[in-house]
Length: 264
Ligand code: PEP
Ligand code: MN
Image (cartoon, rainbow, N blue to C red):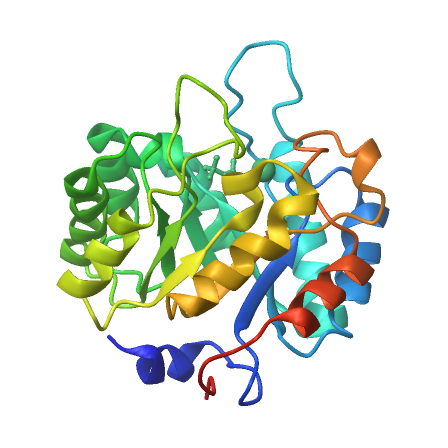
């Protein structure tokens, strides 16, 4: 698949802007979801709305997402704004509920990509349904594991596949929350030149002030788009508060990007 093939199912923005997927780390309330989506629909590059409903938290006793209760809010986003919707799935049950709720695109999170049993469970639940699926890299720096997850989707009949680079866990936190190890997504790009590759600067940096810099790097490396966590009041976010940006800040970031070539 190439970026033109992506255009068949994802309305790409006007030439000169990358595709942007934006929305909160987590759906927190109907008001927060709709308020964010209405602000984002004013940004031409944003074509898809993201919000986590089932949150894979590293440690227990944190907010784990509102679950299926939030699915109708995403349907409302689509109806009111025309944005496509996407959320993370980690189990067959999540897939079943998303398909029922009319979610447009599914994504597999970094912790799930690292577990072939879970990836296969999702692939089995998707047999016969050709919904677009975005596969984040595994949390560990293992290109084969990332490719394996993409292959499991492909073998289940998923033809609309996208890879998302969100960086890799490291024991020592340096500048970024997750080490981008740019050579790994670049190797994927060389192996699968037709596979659309997006960058997730929010989870790479862990810090909103560094998001712009990583977006620019992704554009310089010819990645096909960005997925950026956006919240109307980031400091009060229920998850990933330090890395989310407001819709206004997102617009500044997108407008500031120097693009090597036209995205069309
Ligand atoms: C997310 O997108 O909110 C998320 C949990 O991402 P990741 O799987 O990359 O940690
Ligand atoms: Mn997040």
